[in-house]
Amino acid sequence: MRLFLGLDSSTQSLKALIIDIDSGKVTVSASVNFSTELPKYGCPNGVLPNKDPLVKHSDPLMWLEALDLVFSKLKAADAPLDKVLALSGSGQQHGSVYLNDKFDDIVSELAPAKPLAEQIRPALSRKTSPIWMDSSTSAECAEIAKSVGVKKLQELTGSPAIERFTGPQIRKFWKTEPENYEKTDCIHLVSSFMASVLAGASAPIDYGDGAGMNLLNLKTLVWDFKICEATAPGLVSKLPTAVPSASLAGKLSPYFKKYGFKPGIPVLAWSGDNPCSLIGVGAGDPGTAVVSLGTSDTFFAAMTSSRTDPQGYGHVFGNPTGGFMSLICFKNGSLAREKVKDECGLDWEQFEKALSESKSGNNGNMMLPYFVPETTPLVLKEGARYSGTADFCKGKVPASSKVRAVVESQMLSMKLHSKWIGEDFKCIRVTGGASKSPGICRILADVFQAKVEKISVADSATLGAAIRAAHFISAGRMSSYYEKFSAASEVISPDPGTAKTYSELLAKFAEFEKTDK
Ligand code: XUL
Image 1 (cartoon, rainbow, N blue to C red):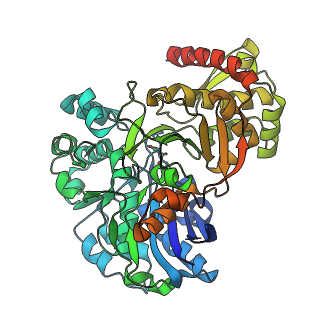
Image 2: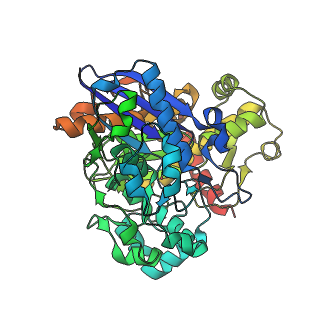
Image 3: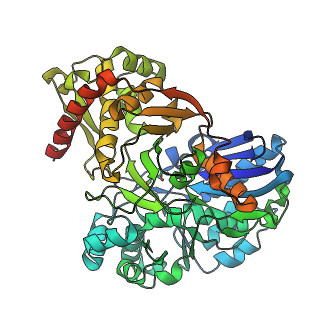
């Protein structure tokens, strides 16, 4: 029995699980939900309320309290923390944490008797952390793009300037709070911040998550000095080193001995949740696409060739097995499905029934479900738009038609915006909360005319983090580790009878999206 721990600091919760790499089993798991278990931070669904719908920040101290809490839960459950050989983690991508020059000393001398949040508080040079849901940096994106060159920025960093990416967020901080920017000694991602606290020392940023900053030169794999200077003065000196995902962040801080861990076990660099999911679902090698249906919906795959999205919506991130992965993010994922469910007065069971009772193609009725500002395509004005019959557009249709419209439109958007990857994926692995829905998986299979495979472990990012830790200390091919966990538990084959319906609907959807102003 060889045990490894994975964590996932995501938008709405912190999750942990322990795997036994020999049996290929998850032995124990625990989680902390920010809304329900840490309401004192006033961050419902992990986001601080703000009157500007484009601004989305969170409280980094809440993530730390969640870390103490999740380990307390594991300890209370008699989890064999003393047998854990190494650990790693996954973080919501793009979010940033701003630290002053006290951070290094504080984090290296954590007192076990005091909570993490209380000890780290004085090291924050910015109280809140902008997260991936933020869309408030269009001006900064335009400034960076102008100074670096639109094409050049995309060519070097794998993405054009993107609102939620860390570089534009840092520029906004420098512009709006120059004194606090000056007081900032180090800027971490959520992933490298959490790894630093575990390791008791400032941790590096891995290529998987670092590529989501608009700052990492994917050709040289170091921070691009010119782009950093175009972002904010002196930025390079405030960034941790960029490293391959399989790098040591440090040794577990003695602080965590109180939960039963052996001090000094290796803490592997954390990565972003999408790169970790790529490993957790067993798609680290090219050929299989992954659809993650969570707060955001994402479509990603290990890349065979180097290319970027001519439309500028897709991204290139580091693949933890080496090389790169493509990724497209849709901000209106689960929240949009939930919004339609609530508007129709349904529960999730009725939502599922509505999907099974309605017909493929939905009589041409579609929607652009931009309940929050969207990133693919870039639409900052929130609100759903409808196209189809007059009754549908007026909302005078049965709930089943609206439910089908949101799901079909989400999958059509994925199909449309993943074309640039240039691969006709015949197998899609699905993960995230909504992957449990048979109706959603059926529509995904039919729209892509690809088989959809479910895997048994739902928390693929947390699992991927644990597998990365195991691979790091045991060596060998990463696939020989993830294959133990990623056997398909169910396969949904596409219905060829729906191919024509969806290829016609895709053309109409593309027009609908184009004409939306
Ligand atoms: C990816 C993205 C989201 C977050 C969610 O670019 O913004 O998928 O990683 O945690």
